[in-house]
Image (cartoon, rainbow, N blue to C red):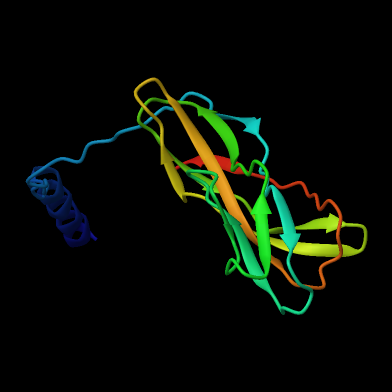
Length: 167
């Protein structure tokens, strides 16, 4: 028993006098950052308007009418089967947020409806917008609709969503 106690005492003494293992440190320490943005707002400024579309005949299958987001200019199919006039315009939204921030924009497709008749709208807009030095920016949204010779006459309308989120 004395031998066991002596051995245990020797082990305890060695444990108390042993030097700890050396700690490893990286050659470069990491840094932490946090970017804080002011709240982002998006505000409606102007509706999307395709203008007036006049069918020149009723026998064509389908052509596309487009409004350019950046300019509001209309492209009226191939130029033979229909004529476009009026005052076309792209939709416009203003953004307000943190200066220089990149904002992701999204808007799903939807239908413009006239009773039971629908025109499938495909939106066209920039995927991102960079806010200027004052935190201001704008989203100009255009898009396209298919028009066939047998499209019923009338006013086609629809409501669409636009969302903006910091990147």
